[in-house]
Image 1: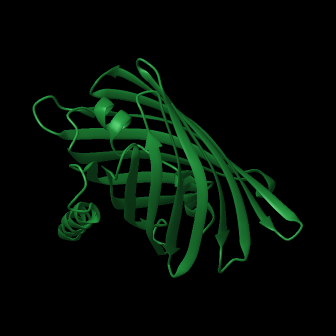
Image 2: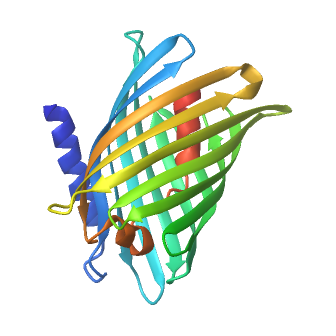
Image 3: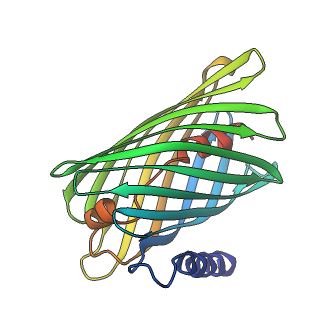
Length: 253
């Protein structure tokens, strides 16, 4: 637990430092999560710290940085450490946001990168978001194409429900493998403190190799710079481009 708390504090400091001194007050979150994954007959436990920070540049332009550090224990058979980070550049108004991103991940010294475009559209109590990206698994000599969509519904300003669907194609020469994932979840922030609880479920499959995984996740977050979850969604750190590929990474490496 001491290592988790230290990593959480270190990640928070890095995210705060990412915002330049001349930018408006940054908004975002930092937290810790636990996930239980069933992969066929194998179980995996993952502890992770993650965070995101967004800030205005000039005019309608902004940037977001997000990252995570995780350790996965595959039922005592071995452990995998994953470090990932993504930078986003976007323009946003009261109706929509559009931008691009570049991400890097290191899985036990195996490097994965991806680049893509993403967007959001805002309605009264609903946000629709999507992203499209291309990436490479350098050590495995694999290319990837990913398409991801998400709907976020705000029951109240501090209670959000999510549903998402993602597709990834992995290509090695003339050989292709398609991966799918579907997830539901939510986040609730307490009225008395900027602390929120997260929970979610994701089902992932790699069709052509007949592998599937079910993941249940819970987490605790500290939120800064935005008064409510809905405010963070519309004006803060709310971009998820690259996360679909990160899910595939966890399923195959």
